[in-house]
Length: 226
Image 1 (tube, rainbow, N blue to C red):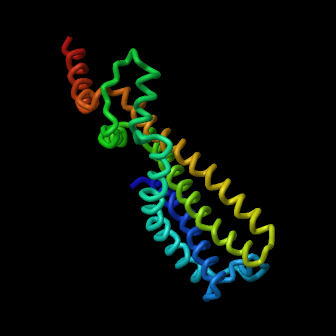
Image 2 (image 1 turned 90 degrees about the horizontal axis):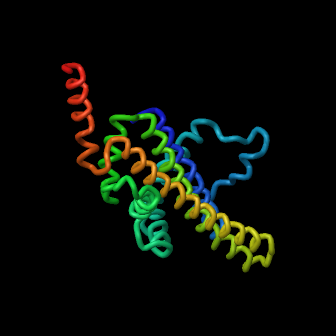
Image 3 (image 1 turned 120 degrees about the vertical axis):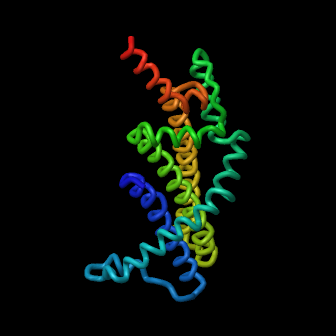
């Protein structure tokens, strides 16, 4: 794994994982169970020691992975299917074909994985840039789920205390959820779009992409022999 990809992976799961831990902590506080007083950490001289912070970061990273499965399968994909019956890869490829009909593109939506594998081998810089779109999409869909999980907690506080600020917070959380899930869709579309567009440099179908290097080498030898 490259350094950049490692950073994107950490970025995708650690930050949302901290949000998920905060949601769990807030739930424990509301039901009267033991919880961590996060607000006290913000006071001068009250910041947790590294020996305490490190396990929290580790648990947050794991929580980010665990909840991402929920965010992807039971939240993100469900909402995406409501908006668009086609998958993101199919929709991205459709847009590219409509944009460049003269290229007679023969890629299929399911080809994105093998195409991305070849991009990693042949152009690591481009692959890392594409990985960034996926990392952003993963982070944003988890932020959307985390914020959505906070909304019913604050709604409960509104009804139990009749403090209008909790209702305002709930509405803001729903708005943030809608915005972040929309941005996550956008970055996921960009992820697939860039895979297909970058692969066009090597061919119009999977076979041409696979045989690109051998054809390039054969052409080079022919030029030298000629």
